[in-house]
Amino acid sequence: MAVKGPGEGTRGLHGRSIRWWLCLLALVLAPAARAVLTIEITGGVEGALPIAVVPFGWQGRGPVPAPVGRIVADDLRRSGRFKPLPEADLVSRPTRGSQVNFKDWRLLGVDSLVIGRVLAKGGDTYTVQFQLFDVLQGRQLAGYSVPARRAELRHLAHYISDLVYETLTGQRGAFNTRIAYVTVRGQGKQREYALKVADADGHDPKTVVRSRQPLMSPAWSPDASRLAYVSFEHGNAEIYVQDLATGQRRLVAGFAGINGAPAWSPDGSRLALTLSRDGNPEIYLLTLADGTLQRFTHQPAIDTEPVWSPDGHDILFTSDRGGSPQLYRKPLSGGPARRVTFEGSYNTSADYAPDGKQIAFIHRDQAGHYRVAVLDLATGLMRVLSKGSLDESPSFAPNGSMVLFATEENGHGVLAAVSVDGRVSQRLRFQEGDVREPAWSPFMPR
Amino acid sequence: MTNWLKWLGMAGAVLVLAACGTLGGGKGGSHAGGGAVVEEPGAAAGTTGTGSTGGGARSQGVELGGRDFVARALHDPQSPLARRTIYFDFDSATVRPEDRKLLEAHAKFLADHPKLRVTLEGHTDERGSREYNLALGDRRARAVQRLLEFMGAAPEQLRTLSYGEEKPADPGHNEAAWAKNRRVEIVYEGY
Image 1 (cartoon, rainbow over the protein chains, first blue to last red):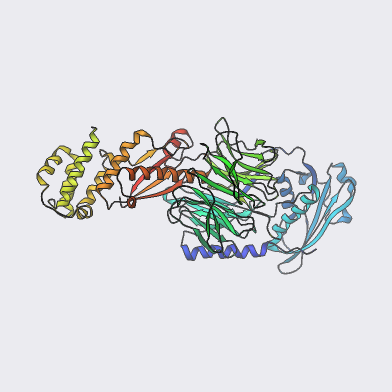
Image 2 (cartoon, chains in turn green, blue):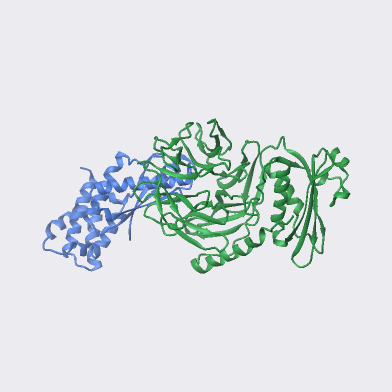
């Protein structure tokens, strides 16, 4: 099987995008201290599948270029669906199938085993081989040999995690995806905002845009190649679309009043957005190719935070037309908006699950806490998933397994993720500053 | 009538005086006149009575003699115009009744100084979602805009801007801080 390395394009791209900013905006770009997200699992993992991931073998000179096995084990642990055996408990460290003694692994109580090795092929090329075994049946479930460059090895490890996850759970893995988020550092005139993109495990953060003025509301295009976001660089909130490969950015909405809450249509041709140019925050549909603007809501109330249903048939949005902010759904083909949330007096900031059956949003509970909730659209049942008091910006993983959101810890903004069943939660800690407004990317094109 | 309304009336009169050129176009002259008003309202009233003769371009007064005057009217703690922030209840864009008089003072000041421009900056507290708050800040700024216009300010003098929850006045995470952050700031351009 041939796998296209996902890493190559990305690396060059971000370099270009940063240079572009240096040239065009002359914003302060002193190389920041390398800021890395660290992830800690804060919730239980009972019911997780026991699996052993053996550190991959390395055939080549010098240190191993990437800890592929460890990345896979960390991915699987983070998902909450797996409980990888601690490395210290590994009875043996096979790197090829012939070295595997299934009886040993059965005694350790693991159901599945991942082994592999990284082979240096000269220059910047490597081959990664790996196998996934069903320990109980003593048979191989998957096995691949994949060429990669050094810079692609981490992505390849995530790809292996995806394969293991999909083979054993039946659900597509979302490890080889990315997250966008906004960081804020400094106070007063020194305050600096940055829109960043990192791998889904927090590794390899890259700055997309930096500004002294607030940045908000990143939204991924369906092909994960572009971000729409809000920038206050000219005073009021305006919407830009930026190509992550070239760094080129374009002002797509800079009308009088607010220009906010961009959301991509499933086909990537349109943005739903909020404009107050006609005197009141209303939702409009902008066709990106020709700039055509179509007004979608007509209410003397706030209408904002649009999000397209995955089938493209309707738009879910926040409105206070009933006296308090609630979520409503309105078909694109016309017809009235129907209220979706009824519990509580504050439900905002919705995101659709990829299958369109559930929505995540921010719900204020009776104690005044703002928390992430999930609602099943068919049954109307709502479940609160998070435990913070000022949680914000829920964003579904592209496989629907988890919801990423912003929360606070010791007065600082951090990111967190929780599984849709509420059983597993994790924190993504940034080394400095506040982190907020996460947006989980769609699946990256393979 | 409250003190500040009296004050405002006198301030307007002195401005006319300045416009008439009796205090001269020079900065020092206007400073002296304006200073008298702010520090000693009684004396200023007298000056006004004796000095308002002759004609002159009102706009000139604003541009030359009026600049310091406007600055003092806005920044002197005794001036009603020194208060340029009004506050809102949670998730509300309704101007509180007790703030209407303040807005009337600003509307009158703007009507008397047609060259002045203000930006009405709408803000919210940090609770809830950022985009909803951006919209709420917009609603607050526009509520103030509508009132000022109704009270006599010209539409072209007023511009709205919403920062939502992005620029809190108080970075705290409690009700006291939130109350200070749910606001519209009246920002006079150039002052």
